[in-house]
Length: 552
Image 1 (cartoon, one colour):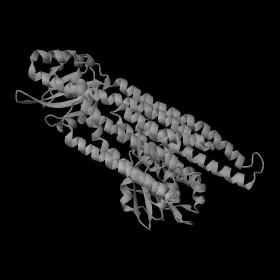
Image 2: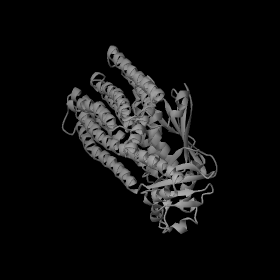
Image 3: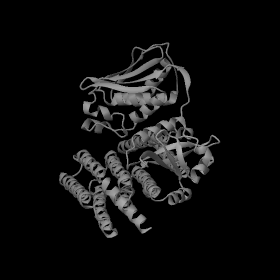
Image 4: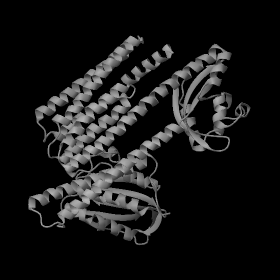
């Protein structure tokens, strides 16, 4: 047991230092971006002191990781604890610097940049779950130190929207704490699985009796098969989980227990195996009665009597998947609960600014209109987050219907015309085929059009024209295009256009705002329709976003 625990301790420490570089890269990039965004709003001296401090602690953590890699040959508990303490000091110091950002870098009376600061700090907190979750105290301290000052900042404000933001961050903090706990437990389980797998494989070479004993007492399903996939040996747990007898399984192969789509994934991982390595894949096993269940399989390539064989430890992860589903449902429920009071706030502000309670002083009306606009932005953000959650959990459902393209595009223009007028832009339908009919989810497709039209309006020059057109690519595919004549998209940003939270790093983009989720969501919707979305852009000339959809 002591040797087992020492191996886990050593593996935890190695994983911590192995993930340092990714954390450092994220820290440096985010700190530089934050400094650039806040340069005109926060004292330059404070910004530079904070940025230099972040860079110095990042360098310290990088050098510490290099030293660990070059000198970590002594795996005694005392040595491992020292290295873990050093790592903890570095991560806590980095967390303190991010925590102080909420104090020293918080732009007063500037909600958009306050939200941007919250997104950056929240992103760093979420990223810490991946890089620090092998040490529970490290990830918990990082989350608390970075997010609690931000919570206090928003709740301290008497602004109703700031309090709403504080509530969102509090719920986000609770979700991250739960995710960190689950990730830590999963990491420990994975480390234990790898250790158990290695120990079992070593036992095979030491003693046939010990080999059989280990197999039959293992809590995970064990399979040993040749390079053709035919089973050579299995344990009792494999028989129980699949519903076959041992004799039945020994006449079968791996393709008999996998779903067709899962078999290809397994075979690809199998072909990448090298001696002494382990690869984990998630797949679906099929029982004798035809039902399926999810497993996490650890694959290893071993040589027994000069014959290469593959060993597989498969763990039933049905409960874990259920917990993941519960977590996603929780996030969705929380977002819905936030949307309800915000919708009420927006409605009340709309009535007040519309004169429902009488004529307001000019200054009061301007402040209420600003609050109303920012409430709408928060609602858009929550709706986008809900859509992304549905996409990532595979719950984005479509309701297909057949409709003519002309009324659909006319409605899209009408619904977004008021937004275009804010920028002095006009939408024009050009080259529209009257005979085209689509079979699609009209509301989701309208969401795509709203994203493309609003982006085109934002990035058009004043008094500009945005053109909407259709083009039959073939008898089975129609292309819908939205063209603006604005500044265009820089070439070095082309690869990031459809990424989540992506925005061009320029002052022009920051003035335009937005969540950075619209195009990512649009891409998922179009792909759900078995279509394709893309763009072409020339700097200084304009940009055309288009999507191709099958007519049937």
